[in-house]
Amino acid sequence: MEAPMQITNVEISQYQVCPNTARHSASVCMTLADRVVTLFCSLELPEGISAIARAQAFVGDAMRQLRRMPEFRSGKQQLSLDDQALPAVA
Image (tube, rainbow, N blue to C red; front, side, top):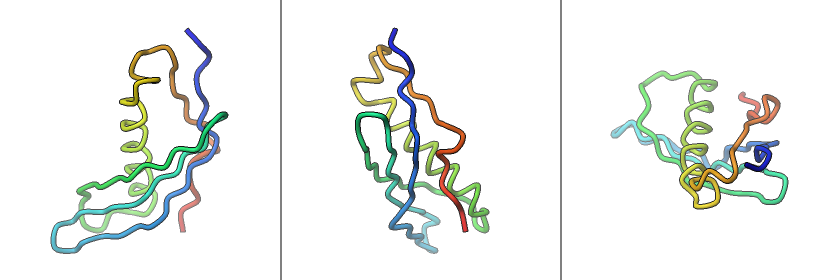
């Protein structure tokens, strides 16, 4: 098995929330050693969720989507999230 593919930076942009459906959506851009991947995430989150918890939910969904990509789903490459990669939350 190869060394884990390290995610070194995460940016969340184009955040929107629909108050009628509680759907939160954003683009999550993840920087890896050899590529940059942008994923669209749409989540149903509770009302009043903190910005930190919301960011963690988006990162979790983006990681789920990355793990479903063929290069990671096969198990030949593992994903690893650098602790410093999490986005700054205002």
